[in-house]
Length: 256
Image (cartoon, rainbow, N blue to C red; front, side, top):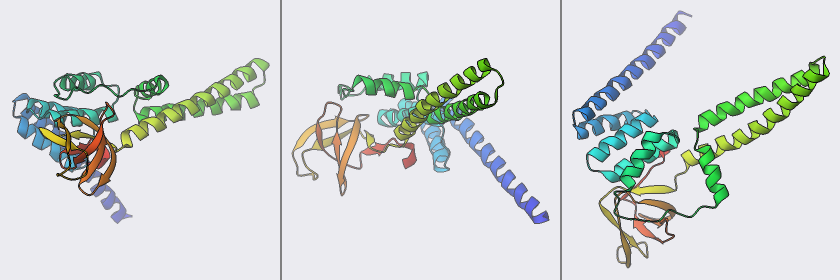
């Protein structure tokens, strides 16, 4: 028993010290940003990522630091990562739009069927964790309603219990699928951002292939296939081609 308590205390202190270390580094990076030491801020934020710390605020601040340092591709990358974790954050969306207006490649947005667009805008209102929490709450509501319907002594109470049970069940199914869609959007790994000044889009997966066009930093791509050191990619205007993997960085935070 004595050894158990010693082990518990050691684990607790480890988590406390880790939390303090994260907060200290985060504040240090923030202060470096305020002092316009953007490279120092970037290095400190990146060290937190290497420690396994993930948060929308960290990605957002890192995007700001890269933008101030002139690396707009990395800025787009981290704003996109921040939005994956906190899809309804207005500051992140505003900054991302600001950076996208400065990109050299002016590509039209990919056309989306209006029902798919509506569904995407709906599940982007909250994170997957929030939708999951709502699902659990609604399941409990449905359960309570059915319990009242079964055990209530009056007709009116049974009626309201039945209504609560049905509505809670239907809404819980709806929010469950919203949570699933939000989780899938966060986990998808088939998108990438160009993070160097320019990269050639070619007709084939080798440097000798004809160059279709020159793409620039910050351009978003769909990853369709891969061969060796090359990705087959698609642009929002439905152009497809091959590009080397080196200029790309997937913005799925699971790839950290």
